[in-house]
Length: 335
Image (cartoon, rainbow, N blue to C red):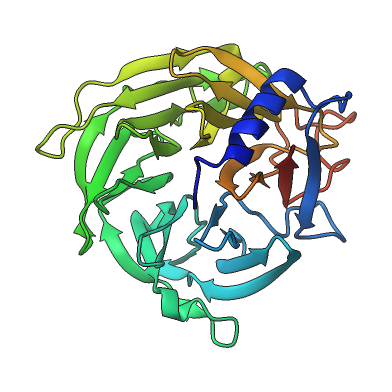
């Protein structure tokens, strides 16, 4: 996946100048690439992640079935190529509810399984529509496993959600080690009832090897500078803004800006290296963004996964649902 292409630099410029998703002249094309459940918006399919392989083919996973899905943007349809099986824990069936997703350099696919306190792996050769491969345990000891990413040396980093802990694990997997801590925080949403406690969510490295952490609770982005011993220094705040409420997954563009899925605001937001925050695209509950949870840059497009939770600005006129939108889907943004 190449993030430094000229087309992406152009895309970044166009989107920054274009403003929010009112579709005025000069704004980028934002459209639904694939609706995973066209007959319903009842969340019978739930996706929270998206990544791409070296050929630009997209991968996501269904939190309901545990199926790992492949989507070719040139001929978009969901093809099952793997599966994370449910387990019986303490006598109860527990679904994996996969969160973060990422490829390593060899093409093996990794997914965070928070309910298992694990990261699981499907080997590249087993991502097969004829015989979908079963995920196997790779990393253990990561309660609330959420976002995942690799550094340039192939070390896997994992965010621990509400615990605020960031973990790492080496090439061979096994027990993950805590390497950093974001202070806990709980934000009460404007309805006065719902609360947001996740302080370590999406993870991404910049070109200098600095790890960025999305703080969903605070609406903030933290930076972690890694030491030679593999541990991180104290978190430093890059940005905090009402525009970042619901900050979830992230992706760097070729110009160095960090793009963030602000799920509660149905928005994609940019953060410059200096910490300046701008809304790039934003819309109401009818989409195309519907509680956007993850994004990936590939080719000359950005692809966004819609988690479609009925909350904040993803609520229809009844103020109780999000049934006026498309539901679980992938959005394509192009210049």
